[in-house]
Length: 167
Length: 414
Image (cartoon, rainbow over all chains, first blue to last red; front, side):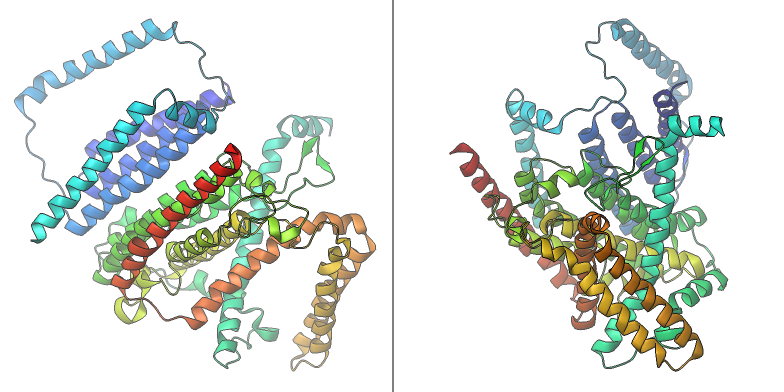
């Protein structure tokens, strides 16, 4: 087994374990911590694919900023342990078959498309950050600007909502 | 024997990296310990006191005594804590603080000899995205403090943890924005490339803080924003509200005792070193000398500093009160003088240490600045702190980005 493959399996196991723990933990803080594990493991996977910039941004934005806000809010609300209700009837009977079907469908699609992937990332290959930014500001400039606009609207919306409550 | 050589030739990179990590950890932890001694001494002299002077000559063994005390104190855990998170928090704080040292380059050239065919660079790793790695570690660093405060199940730590997470989120923005100007000029996230971009024949005129010699734009504003945000990010005076004694006892680490407390302590001092190194690398030319390249005589500066310092320690040691001091201090002084003389006698060695000398010298200055600030400045009020972060530093650093971008565009566009 080569080193990248070994690292991949360790990170993948970490991500899956984190995701499972996120659902099973009773306390919101523990769930949030599990989600951070998932985020950081994903960043490791990106790094393995040579996407250095994406990996760093994954940790800064998701692992850092967003999850810090989650933890902050949980701490501020002093949320206690969750109460478990009985699982809904639908989840009880249809949950497992449906999730298995979804996994199977995704796997089938990936296997089917797998051969068609052009230029797969090789271990040790690095994506150039400046190339990413060039693409972002030339080919994808309209989607990029639209996303920025969307974020701006969301920020203004949050401001308006917060101010209204004060008044 | 042959198999060992073969193993080291093949896997030498891994072995070498492990050795370097162990060495760097040892050095940094020792420096941390003596940083506490340095801080206590400097603050004491600022307040017309002597500072630690009982344990060892001039109190030099005080850090060792403190370390032993941390190890042997009772490790109390309050009732009702969230055990897993309570134990996780100091580990997170310390490992993240230490991990950031891995990407900092300590010198320009690899050592003149190799390790079984592997070059020995003066850094553990030098990724293309060095600066982003540092920022991602900083982004995660909030958890150590926030979780410690939450898990302690006590009101003061909770308030301290909340304060510090709010503070760190707020100042992370201006911290990141303030270095964008440097990135625009260097065109790279790599720390070594940022340093290389500040090289010039006119010494300090090429540094990003001045920026004239390389046709860049001065980053004085960027540096001020960066350093103020960095002090806030490391929770030091005058931004140490998360541990304001008069209001919150000791803030987020109130309920931590023994070595778990020491872990937070070491983490704080390690991030001080990281921030000082980063300020040096980004704005003050890294390992470049402030003097013009043609002034070869400035290469003797390390010796000019070391030899008198060593001689003074010998002179001071001979008339020291205790016998232990009369033995140890002249010994240390002789070693320092000998190093200074050796640098004069071996010009190649002297040339090699120029880079690390200037880098470490500037880092030392910033560490002194930290202590200086602690000895002089009063603490901010919490609303003032938030005002400075959001209403002053953030807009100013964004304005700096715009102006610098305009300058870079003007220069490259012609």
